[in-house]
Length: 115
Length: 115
Image (cartoon, rainbow over all chains, first blue to last red):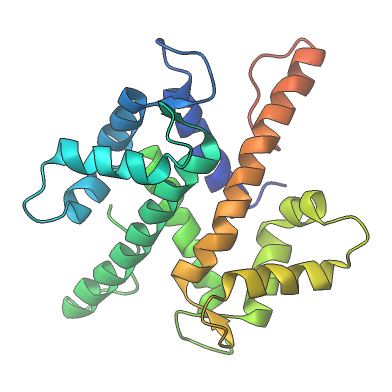
């Protein structure tokens, strides 16, 4: 039986494939515009919350792409995308504790992540 | 609305908290035995598939723990756990392509991850 963690990882892989295999390229790599679409559609709260002060979103996405793009070619393979995925996971974890602190402020129980 | 990617990340955080806040320690850190329990219960296929030839599972889990434990104390905080999470994600991605190749061998469509 697939565990909750394995199911979540499989869902992440499916999201990755949804964008890496979009119309313009059926390969397993994320072109820059596919990476941008993925973040804007699937991780918009991450983008909004972690956008460095005074930076344009387009520049931030470019910065995330370059930091992940270890071999400096024109696209990311999955292992490079995991660099950004790690940032997303850390953000989600931080949010889970922010939600808890807000929950404690309003007498709620242990609340996780943005709903 | 929470996207599929955000939901998956929130589920991963909940799994992490299930083990980091187990009976023996209510903190947000994974003690070694909590890390071991998490991997054995939630990522058993990863452990079985990626176990280096000739290595004992206990030694492999110890090796994964040490590789994640950057500050070399007795437990992992979430950002250290992400090191192992990255390995799990890469394994899940590799499995998704293994399943596709097997699927093609049996005339199935695009199948993702272990079911």
